[in-house]
Image (cartoon, rainbow over all chains, first blue to last red; front, side, top):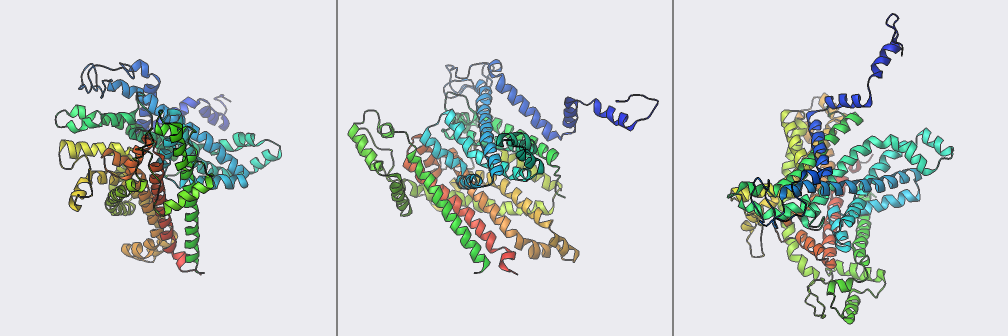
Length: 306
Length: 326
């Protein structure tokens, strides 16, 4: 760009402003403008991801390490005490971040791969495939998700792999609907037609022509779906048919320690123990919701209804 | 034919078709079982003859479509088959009919759900309409933040917080909602208070936000603007212009959330050890008692589909455009 100070150039002036902003700087500016709730959400998500990745380094004890004293009170050795068979609650909470959040994340990714691919294919094909998939999804969505998941788990058994596949397939119905709806608007664009005429195959059209244009709503949906999947898995684990012991998991931890709540009058701290994993679930869901809210405002341009 | 009747009939047909497909899916559950399932239920010590007899009783020697019609006809007549539990390797059969297990609990679940609905529906409609009328005020914003937070909470978190404050720290309500057929009405309400409050808190948030959105959407339409410009009063606008068009979205909101109640009730029943269908289903899933799981799933699914159907029909029969065709 022209940096000559003697002659004036509009392009030079505008160019120099544009020039010094890298992606990182722009991200920083966006973040500074973000509302407090979004900043709080991002902070919480970073903390949880950090806990999940570095769990073995942070946790003072092992995930399934058993100590002689069950239901130990809060102390210096065991910050949040021990559970019904003497495992350190604090360590299990940290490992729980890895297991519960990890399983929910894997499930959401799988749901998006299935639902996204089928939704795109249905939008492009628009004939028997679209009809078949859409009607199947309608029927699947007519059964409440938790009930359907319970039926499938009773047949296939509660292993982590089954859990991920079942919830992902059930949740992909909603991803399918959204992907199909937003890509229907893009499929009719001229550049998609041109690509098809050029002889590009269907996967190329899907990846290079349509996907980039439907990404923002899909990313927002990813956050919301993650919350939903996360809550479903936590509920199933809480019911005892999700992630199985001895794997540390927030949902089942609530259930295992629930009886402590009866002793609130004698030891309030101990009574809080079953609420800690539940609060961790709630905190992460609230955080993701805040961030998604902010992201939706940014990308869709929808402002508060006046 | 009158357009209303036609649309209602169409919706009923669609609902029946959905029910049919859903029942096929639930029936297929037993189809997908691994081959050695008889062995798994009866135990390793079961004799081959016992296993064969068990398979025959399940009808696994008949083609699937015949079994489906047997099962579906039975289900319509109130026969959901026989539970797997109570059988053992020697072939002795102390199992119970699925219907006998579900029937007494169904009444309990319905009682809890309707109690929650009776509190939640009026409360959320009032809150939704108030926040829509006074939107962007301090009241609106605080209600909104509060509901956004409770939506993100798992049901059991809300339940245990309520137990901590109202059953453990201050012993106002019992923390276990154990009722039996002899419990009288007042006592029943007192014991199911905490589970009902939990469900209320969970669905009020959803219902109130959806009502608010529906009303705001409505108040922005041109004919409301027109009514305002013509000098109609606030009450007149709401009662004469907005409400007739609002029944459909409000009915959808209520039915959607009552359907959500069906799911929420499972977790809440387990927390409060309430003898309802949800708890029966979770226990059956843990012991892989498929006929009981199928029976419960069928009841939940039918309720869910019926509620959505009712919402659709209310939407159709209150739609002013359909009622007064050109």
